[in-house]
Length: 318
Image 1: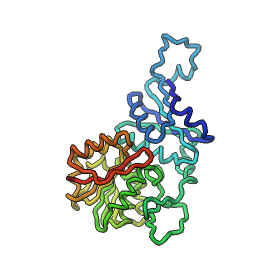
Image 2 (image 1 turned 90 degrees about the horizontal axis):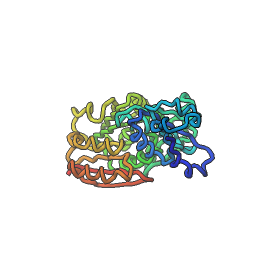
Image 3 (image 1 turned 30 degrees about the vertical axis):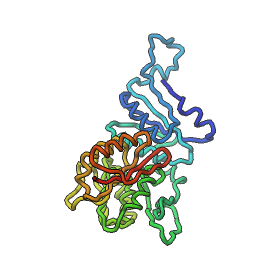
Image 4 (image 1 turned 45 degrees about the vertical axis):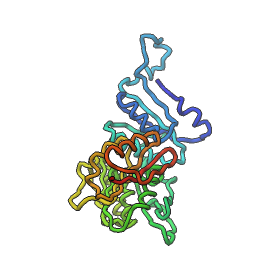
């Protein structure tokens, strides 16, 4: 089955776009579709497993379909050419890994070796909230008196500041980060949140990600920003998180709804009694599920913010 219904109307007014294509084992097709739909509804699904050759005339079916691997399926998302497709690639890979399945990602018409550079032309300094300004490492920016500059080269890790989920949680960080706090970033991606917290006055930041590439990129960005109070290590959610130095004042988790729900039974023991958890990466359709989990595991909502179909929460232990 090739389902182009999602993409037809939406692309009619777009002259140029990039096709970001993910391929998985057939059993993970629904999971991949859910992740891709978080990026855009301009989807194309390629699934040839339901073609019944007994009821079809073989000479009327394209040979490539007849010979296609029926054990795999693909989902493509179509992005305007000016949109940062590298962010989408990182999002797909990280979210798939968090959900426990492997995905092969390609950008149709763009060589893989060009991924790290071709999108940079569209990544410009971006102000978020009142003070934070995300500045690409290769860009010049005239600093204003109240600016808090975060220099980023995200490489192949998620977190440039352009995605709604990152913007939401940075806005909350600006509000809830206090001088002298200990901050924990779970699923740190490029390290952008820990760096923001450090520059907003946190005394110590611990950043963790399951992806070794993300950890490497985060460490590089931490060094670029001269944030000596941040340490970054590899961890599957909270399994390797260090609490020897004490509990945390502020915890960030820009992941997805299911992973946030999964970590709620355990995250409380890493938090001080008055600590705040910033939870982002949640599509609006899953907000009720997440809020029910907050109640179930003893958290109350302090703030709820939304942006273009995504939402984030500031919560604390009751």
